[in-house]
Image (tube, rainbow, N blue to C red):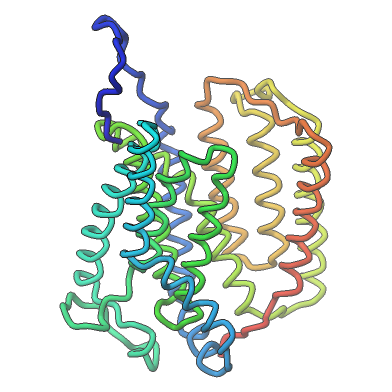
Amino acid sequence: MIEPGDGSAAPRSAQPEPPPPSPPIPAVVLSVIALLGSFAALFYIDIPILWFLRSHNLSALHSFGDLGEKLGNGGTLVTISLLLLGAGYMLKRQALTRVALDSLLAHGAVAILVNGLKHIIGRPRPRLTHSGGWQWWPSLDSGLDSFPSGHTSATVAVVTVLSRALPRYRWVPFVLAAWVGASRVWRGSHFPGDVAAGMVLGFMVGSIFNGPLRWWGRSCAQALVRIAPVVLMVTSLFWVLTHRIVDPMTDHILLASGTMLAAGGMALRMSGQPKPLPGEGITGLAVADSLVGLGLGVVTGAPIVIGLAGVWCFARWSGAVAATTPCSSALSSFRQRILYPAGMVAAIALIQSLKGLVPLQ
């Protein structure tokens, strides 16, 4: 993050800002493993998803996707940043000006990185792909630049920085970024794996510019740990869509087991556990989140999803062991107590209803 002077008369003896805590190495390594496993799964099902999109008339989604394409366009993102820059300058709000400048720098950095990777990897666009037997090879040709998604990476990088200006509503720009990423898939411009890679790169670059640049290593490590469960959820969604239920009895057993795990995690989270649990110093919040995540993974009935969810659980525990500040898992408001369990129930119902809608051919 750029650190221009703010015009204040701070004493020269003021202590420098302490660096943010770095996530433990096991958490970072396990998060990377979960990300690599997610990419491998997405690459395996990219072609069936492509065939499904080509075999259905999605004109309404194409129109809706056009808006997402325009929102994720470089010109639109630069315009948004420049408008915020002008507003910060006119209103004399240096914090807003700094956010706008950081978003422009993040956009430029991720554009250079992504365009370099596109041509080094040389993955064909979906329109040039007619079977699974393509070769990825460095190329400067148009159409051989699918991986990673430029629109997604740029949008995520910019909104990661801009979310600093919306501390209470930071979910809004990320919802818009998700819309841009989804539109790249249903418009046939990118494969799901391309969009997931764009999410990771964009979030990492945006996180770097959300702090002093000298802490870029810590920022990247934190970003990897935070983005891993998001990519895992995207992977799980597409995997569930493309795989039918093979054995109904086994699926029912896994559904019941996963629901009990998730319910146990929910109960622990709502009860509140501010102190570390005996043994390794793992907080109750980490155990609760892990049980919910693993439970939802088991509900899918897919071994690869269950395995990746288990890897993420270990990553979550590793990060919790290194935490130095206690964290209470109690939900403070009645609304949260209602919405969180309702969201879990809705997630389980959604997973069950989506199984095998786009089966592998």
